[in-house]
Every structure is written in structure tokens, then in C-alpha cells.
Length: 630
Figure 1: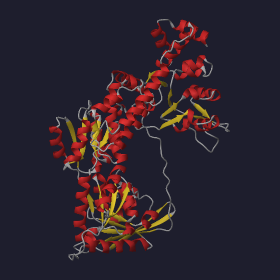
Figure 2: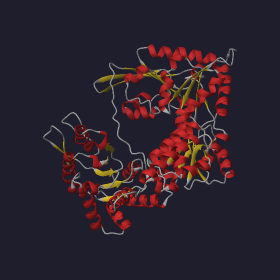
Figure 3: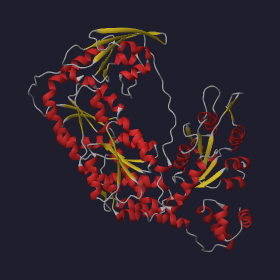
């Protein structure tokens, strides 16, 4: 719309007095901008919204008459194409790129960088200075991102450095995304440039605000298109009258015709000045479209006016999504490499999979990766944790309830159902699940009908189900049905080689949520982390590193900054080891034997074959001793 209001006259004014809207693609940038503005004290509102979410926020705030918008990356470029007021992009500086590459220096996997062409020369030079081999995937527009990410996935890239949309898209392909965050210097420079820009466009901005406000009050839908046949403005009336207009997609004449092919006639004589109209009947409504060309030589494009009798609402349904792929899982240690190799091989089978692992070890991550590598990867992925529900709630959640509720098993048909803490499933429900597994039919509560289902089943528990079978707490027939393949996820204490890369990824993720610019962790801190046993596994590590990021002033997590956290962890670790230490005292031989067996059972995750091997006895002897010791 800005090119519709060209005016050669520019009024003088105070360059420091302008109203700024900031659309931040991620939370961390918002926090940093607010911190900078504590000193600058500019008239500024900051919101978080990436791509079309950001565009929707900007449009919804149009009535506040902002002078300019500040944003970053693909979101800034999208806003520039769609909005009438100026959009200033926060440019990436060499320091921003250097900080991110420093964090990844020494990473063992393949690194890729996706960015617009003007960023790559600087990044390439910095990469060479750091002696890092980086594969570059240049783009011109966000439409190219998916194809380039797919190419990166096929070339074995494990980490993609880029902006918010690049890193989010990378996650869908199983590639870890690391965001290049902006620093204070770039933000201050952008605000200075904004004030200079607003000085020259204040009069045009005020006129545009009045026109757009008028459009919101007229009784017709209004859509403006530029010379490239791309929609640059849609009023609220048009969105309500024609619900196929999707704010998450770029609207063009081509897309409009795809939505309603009968509109082709409206654009057949679009070079002719004046107006053309067409009436289209759709879903019991009459849509009257009017094409208005612009005759002014200084104005390019055209407008569409829309009138309709009533509005129609569209409700979208969300599906559960599996985010993890095998490429996105850290596997530097031999145990994890072996686990992922086995998991990849069995992922294409249709047999059920039983996963053992301690809480926080990553059982669901493995399940998601198996789903995404399976033949049913295009189907839904549904997750149910048996410990999160009462018996009645779990029955409804799994199997459904009459005509009111579709259960998780039906929702997962054509895809994967992952049931965690399967050992906590009440005995009464185990029989119903066995019936589903053996008949491929589900029977809802309070219903006489049985519904056919086709579900890939993955179940998990913290320790061996076989022990629960022997104790009479789990059905033996269901156990054998679920035991198609068996996977053991090693605890973090048995895969310490993975901590380096896990810490890097957690730090990179904290940039988005905390607004930090941390380039890594000092070796002294990392060394202390590797000395701990991590009973909470990866989840515990994640919480600890995120806390350290919050405490750190950057650019590195220093030992003195997080000393209190480390001391607390060390004390907890010593207490844990003390509790697990075998104390002989005045115990009898039978009591010592019982304690040894219990300790080894816990250490081997209740795998009786491994326990028997470590104790130097056969499984039948172990079973007899366990029975004697109750």
C-alpha cells in the first residue's frame, strides 16, 4: 500500500520521536530488545511472532499507527512484502555469526548453514578463520527453505545454523537447528536507522493509516494487489466474507484462482482500465467480486472488492507431531550409535517394540525417530503416559468413550501409538489392550460396536516388564505380544561422550527462550558435569544447563558463575552414591546376598540375563534365589 501514497513533500520533525513496533521471531530477541530499550527509552512495543504469526500481529495492531516495524530474517522480509508501513530488518553482524560458530567449534557431526545470499560471504570468512568446514545452503526467499533443508538432510547434515524458519524446518527433517541470535550492537544500530527512516516517511504513514482505517468500516471486503499480483492488504471484512483466505499463506492471484477457479474470468481482461465484476455461487452463498484497475501512472496494481451475504467459519484440527528424527539425536558414544543402528533397522518392521530406559533417558525421542523412519511416517503419532491418568481416565483416553470421545488407539490408526510407563497400566485394562493387539479392533466404553484399527505399537517402561510378569502384576500373554523387538536406552552416566554435543544443543535452545548470546561452556564446568551420575538423565542435564545459561553473563558459562549449582549437584551425587553403596555392618550372609542382587538388578535395569552374567550364575539359579529372598 505504501506505493499508493507517494508524495514528494517530506515534513521536517524530531527524528527521535517515532512510534516503533517490534515483531520478534523468538522470545530471546524480545527480551534483549527490552533490555536495550531500558537505556534508550524509545516509544516501542515488542511482540513475539514468527513469519505469518508475526504478520497477523502486525495487522491486528495497525490501528495503533506505528511509524515503523523492526523485525529480523525471513519474518522481516515477509512483513516488507505485505505491509504498508516501512519494515527495518535487524542485520546479522559478524560478531553474531562468530558467537554461534564458536559454540559449535569442535562439534563432531556435519554442520550446514542456511541464510540469504548477503550473509554467506561473511559467514564463510569467519568459518575459515575458525578452521570449520561448513556447508552453505543459500536462499533468496523462504519458499526455497524446505527444498534446501531436504537436500541438507540427504547430505547427512546434523546441525543447521540459520534463522527461526530455517531451524524450525530443519527440526521437521530430523536436523538439529541452531539459531543465529542478534546482539545488542545490531539492535542499537537498527533503532538508529529506524529513526532516520521515519523522518522521511512520516507524512505518508499518516495518510496511509487514515485510508486503511476507512477500509475497515466499509461494508465490502477490500483486497489490494501489487504489480506482481501479490496481495499487500486485506481488510477484516474480506477475511470474514471469504474464509479461504489464509493468513499463514502468501495470497496471490494464482492462489486465489486455485481456491476458486471460476474467478479466472475476472482477470481475463485485467489490462483494461476500469472495473469488471463476476458473481460466484459457493456453499449456498453468492460472492460478488469486482475488479478495479488503477489508472494512475504512479500507482501499480489493482484492487478487488468483495460482497457476500453471510460469513462461514472454518475449524482446523491439529494432529500430534513426532519432532525427533534419527539425525537429530546425539550419538557420539558407541552405546548410542549401536542403539540407533538397531532402532533404524527395526523401524520399518510392523512388529511392536518394547523400550526400556530410566526416566529422562530419551525413550520418547527414540519412539518418535522410529515413527518418522517407518512406513507409517505420514500417519499420526499419538503419545499416552499410563502414569498420568487414573484407571477410569486411562480407559477413556486409550479406548474412547461412546460417541463422545475418540480414544488414542483410534486416533493413531494409520500411524504410531507410543504408550509410556506400560508397566503402570492397570491389570483390568491390559486384557482390553491385548484384544486390540490380537484382533486389530477397538471397543469403546459404553458402546456395542468394534472399530477396525491399524496401529504400529511402541511401548516403554523404566525397568523390565518380565519382573512384573513374575510378580503377577502384568499379563504374560500381553508381554509376549508386545515383545516384538526390545531396545535398551542407556542412562546418561553410561554415555558421557554425548554430553559435549548435548550441552551445545541445550545452550543453543536457551538462546531462543532466554535471549542469551552464549558461545559455549568453559572446560572446567564441562569436566564437573561429566563427573556426575545424572540420575535424571538428559532431562536433568537440560534443566541444569538452562539454569546455568540464565545465571551466565556470557559469552561463556564460567565456573565462578555456576559454582553454587555445581556444589549442590555434587552433594546430591554423593548422597546418591552413598545410598547405593553396599554396607556390610552386622548383616547376615543372606542379607548381604539379597542386597547385592537388588543392587545389580537396579544397575542392569532389571535385565535378568545381564544380572545372572554379572553374578556368574545361570538364570534359573538367579530366579530361585530371587524367589527365596522374596
